[in-house]
Every structure is written in structure tokens, then in C-alpha cells.
Image (cartoon, rainbow, N blue to C red; front, side, top):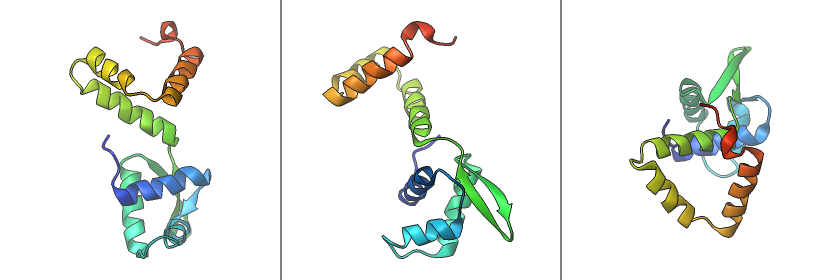
Length: 123
């Protein structure tokens, strides 16, 4: 899984925020509040996001309505997992990561570990 490009990110940000299916036209109108963009450009990028498995779609007349497959948090967690797996020495990578946490991030990590403690991991 690669990180998203600028337009892919802008589209996924909207799809994650909608919490419901949306058409290319819906996303286009939202994006046009911030930039000039063509319908076909948005349609092409949404099709690519569908092919990457980030969006699902259903026919709606002659077009499709799209919906995010997972949450923003799930996507971010997958990126983090893949980055950790490719980082060489995982323990050293985690130490460097922990060294850079802000107090708020450290508190969030501690909260997450209370919800999902290390002993409860699947093998």
C-alpha cells in the first residue's frame, strides 16, 4: 500500500468525512469549493482509488456511487504496519518512533494499549 497523492488524499478525506455513499458529482462539487477541477479528473482518480481497494462502488443509473472501504484510521494503521515491516530492525524503529512522540501522542498510545494490551495479540 502506497501513500496517497495530493488529489487522492483530498478525495479520500471527503469520502471518509461523508460516512455515506457519494457520487463523482458530489465529490467534484465539494472539491470545486477549493480548486478548479474537471469532472473527468475526479472520476479517473476515484476509479483508481476503487482499483486500489480504498473505495467500493455500486451502479446508480449511468454512473456509480462510491463509499470508503475502511476508515481513515484503518488506512493509517495499515500504512504504519507496512512501514514498520519494511524498516529493518523493528525494535530500533519503534524506539526511534517512541522518542519522537508528543505528550498527547504518548497518552493516545497508552490509551490504545489499555484497550488492546500486548498479551491480547493474535499470533
